Image (cartoon, rainbow, N blue to C red):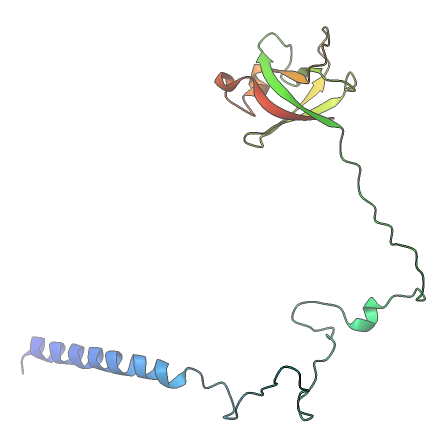
Length: 175
């Protein structure tokens, strides 16, 4: 018998079995998770049959990771009508303004902020509103403050939030 002919025949049998049995196995096993009985049906406005089980409270081994109901009850007696107190952290002081750059600022971490209420020697965070990039600097460059909500950064610090050709850029100045 010719060897190539036998190989072709084996290959044809293997492909035929795969093409026939693969989809047949898939079709025969799908949807067989039930026990053969019809699913329970409850019409709106009626009560469920008495033989159905009602949902139980979550257990300590609940899939979603919720705590048991008795752990959520707490130790406080009921009837207190006082509203709950929620601690919300104070947002940092900040203003919206413009950022630009100068090359003659001494250090990369120094900046000049002219905005009302910004303390001298304060740590400033400048966030570009166009791309959300941030840079931190210290407000310790002297000069006349005009309070026009502007920050002047070192050129290298400005490059961290925008391209030099984009200056001035809209920024959020927080301290």
